[in-house]
Length: 191
View 1 (cartoon, rainbow, N blue to C red):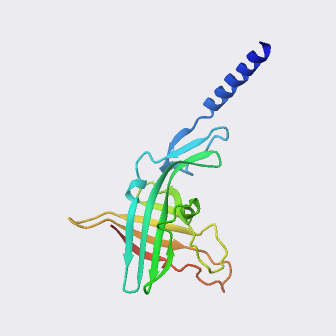
View 2: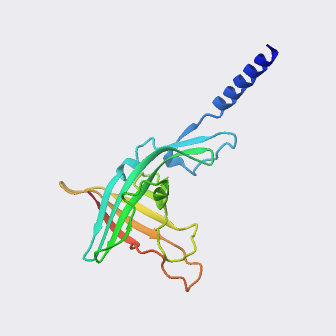
């Protein structure tokens, strides 16, 4: 009987501690802009639905190159004890009719790690994402290796929204070559 009471008290205490550490919901726009309490876990939730404007299939095409990118949403993704709403991308890149990359039909978890993130601007129209290509070019990854996307709303009837794609990478040495095959500056159109 004494053991049962002790076990019950431990369970009650454990539940109380877990409830005290429940997520504090914070708007995603405030990620990195306030002092976090070390003893709390946070859920950076897309309360303004900013990520929704990026979700879907986007396309860039010129005479020789085609990039199709599909952004998808993940909610309540755990990272280091905190939780985030974030987007990730799958893509297909073709150059001169040759498929360079195609992760569109790859359902593995690793395919979600090439382009992902949730660092949205205060305006909700720009997002900064982690960026990696499944490239065979050896390069040193940089903390400043980011894909910046800017949402460009339609300004006339019958047009589709666009995304300005701006890839940033910092060289370690002057002799380093650009390691990515997908162009660094593009305009993608919503399909």
